[in-house]
Length: 107
Image 1 (cartoon, rainbow, N blue to C red):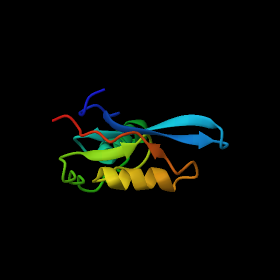
Image 2 (cartoon, one colour; image 1 turned 135 degrees about the vertical axis):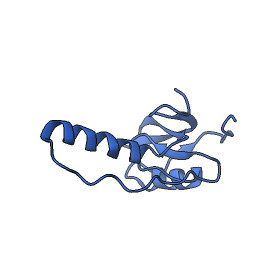
Image 3 (cartoon, rainbow, N blue to C red; image 1 turned 30 degrees about the vertical axis):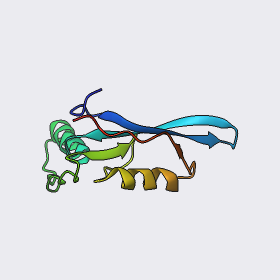
Image 4 (cartoon, helix red, strand yellow; image 1 turned 45 degrees about the vertical axis):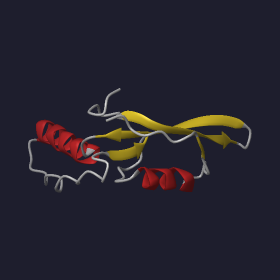
């Protein structure tokens, strides 16, 4: 995986307990583009190809965060900071997450 792939580049991982006993992994990845905008464009193209009618284009591209990337947790929305992505993961029904030692994203 690379920073410019749809999946992004893994930058932080952690674990949560399924049913309080089975350890599951969760990964925060970084992308250098707005994945949600890309998916919306892709959906518009498929609908136009399949149905030949107009569909409103997606909104403007979301600006990248202060690190020059957007962060996401598997199928979550994109976040400008890793702290926002961690907070989202911790707030899910599986949370809280026990995060591994945080490492900095390679430049």
